[in-house]
Image: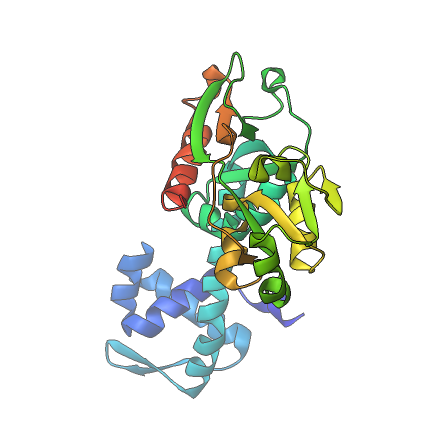
Amino acid sequence: MMLERIPLHTLRTFVIAAHREKFRATAIEVNLTHGAVSQQIQQLEQAVGCALFDRQGRGITLNAAGKKLLAAVEPALAQLERGIRDVQQLATRKPLRISVPPSFAQHWLLPRLADFHQHYAHLALEIDASLKVEDLSRGKYDAAIRIGDGVWSSLAIHHLADGYVIPVCAPEHYLKWKKAFNDRGNVPLMEHNVTPWQQWFSAPVETVATFNDAGLLINAAQQGLGIALVKHLLVKDALSAGRLMALAEPQKLDNSAFYMVCMPAAEKSEPVHCLLAWLKQQLHHQTP
């Protein structure tokens, strides 16, 4: 291969010399002697088979061949340096393992992950999306997002957002269902098993479907299968984007809210501290 003949250590020296247009200035930047720089350029020219610079007294100027090589080498070296930095960063990233409800992961966390990685690139976020309430004392997870009343013994508990609920439906059914909904008419109602419609209407109601996962309930509403009573926080993006329409204002029906929890010993660890700060920043404007 041609690359086997190229002394790769000379390429960076070549790029610097191309911009400095003096071997002496290049030597200072690469921490070599003037003679060593000149020798490296000669080695590179011999390897490629042609001169790369026009010599003019103490100065040098790229010729046509040198300009062609610079155009190929400079971005390649920059990409290589970026790749090495990325690998080094990956090797030093700190793990942050969190357990979250699937609905929170899909409808709130996932759309914001890019922002988290942008601000905390040194953290390797590992997400377990499950309905199972994990025992954090076992040490498998650093923190968890929970939806409930905020009473969990032996844990450090941080309130993130209140659990307002809101009735939503697909846009194509909004006009047809809104009046009937307000008049308590015949409309297809779907509910989450922890937030039944009975709480909203203060009376028993018939439903067409009940889900144990709020994420599935939201997806069903977006597909036009009925009106869903869901946590407002989980559908704010869909409401803003027009994928869902609200049939009433949000209401706080119980003490259920969103929390970040962790073991007290983990509360002040740098990864958990970063996670909590980011969550609070993201949720600062999330109240109804």
